[in-house]
Image 1 (spheres, rainbow over the protein chains, first blue to last red):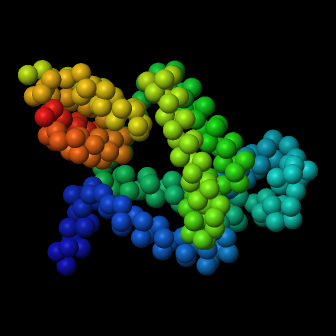
Image 2: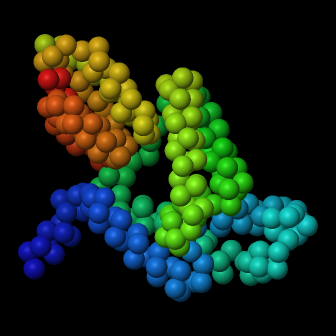
Image 3: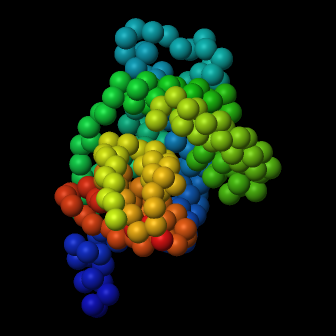
Amino acid sequence: MNKIKEFFSKKGMKKAWGYVAGAVLLSVVQVITLASTGSPWGVSGPLMNWGAWTFRLFGGNVNNWHRFSSVGAQATLDAGFFSDPGTIRNLALIFGALLATLLASQFKIKKIKSKKQIIAAVLGGFMMGYGARLAAGCNIGALFSGIASLSLSGWVFALFLFFGAVAGSKILVKYFM
Amino acid sequence: MNEIIIDALGEACPVPLIKAQNAIKEMAVGDVLVLQVDHSCAMKNVPEWARKDGHNVEIEEVDDGEWEVIIEKA
């Protein structure tokens, strides 16, 4: 009983859970995800759909784009924003992170320090997003879910993720620090 | 004993860690580095590195979502 009380105390909410607890929880929840939605966990795929929906909102048409031309992709787009499990999960991810930081009293709106920081963020975001689409997955869909599905592609992705991280760090230190 | 303050507020990983590592190299034994951060990952990876390197580390929560990682070079 005291343990539970301690967990929900202010101090308990600030305490990090550690790598093992995180790994176990991620594994359990991704199994539930696969079992309940029929697809493995992915983050950047739904984000791509957000782009398609935004484009449609402004009168654009993505139906002939190779990426969205399959029957499955068309069905997901036509069903709409709130019918896509991946979209709901991404929103929940943001709200969950917000909730955790609020419960720990660690919420803070961070200042933008310099123009360089904006350029780095935009450039980094573009490269990650574009790369994730070329690889047909990000570090969740291609790496985490790939390895969890006992697929070799996850390990190949991991190897090149490592090279990408080395290159990214070099660019960061050289131009953006 | 010198005290060096590094303002890494608003900087995301791994920038605070690299800044701390570069600063420690220039410091003498006994000097103190105060690293101001507001990125919760930095509050984890900076002390982890510093303790592994054998320095004395203390973390102080100075405000909501704002910390000072105090490292004494050993």
